[in-house]
Length: 153
Image (cartoon, rainbow, N blue to C red; front, side):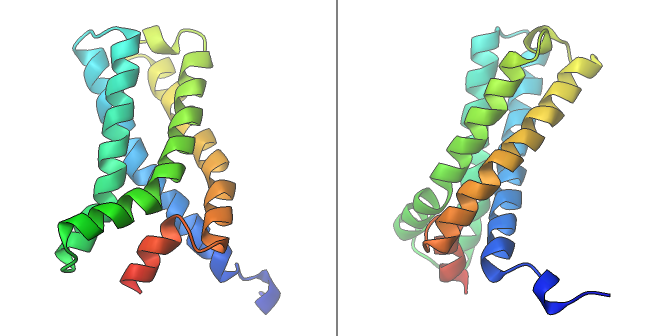
């Protein structure tokens, strides 16, 4: 039995969507970046840098591409994307990379080591937990993902 008061508020729902959206982009970039850098034998600093760059690229692309496809001019879509996603992606990246670096041996683990994938999964899960309250505050103030949502809505 569910009650109306059990349903998430529109702010909570949009914050959850924003955080999930951010995780999809950041997670994709991180996995491709760290796995690719590890496969090519790059050092830890290069692996982190590639993962961060790709996290921003994929995170921004998940907002930018639909806006442009909907007919928004590229310059405006870029501005909306940067305003909507930068804080969330940054929080997610700070936590994600801090966790991967903090887990002993994670940065030296190979692609076929459970530690590599477990630390990456843990880091993304904790990044999600850290980014959700940030997105909730942003959405409540009409900022962050609410900007892109407002453009779509």
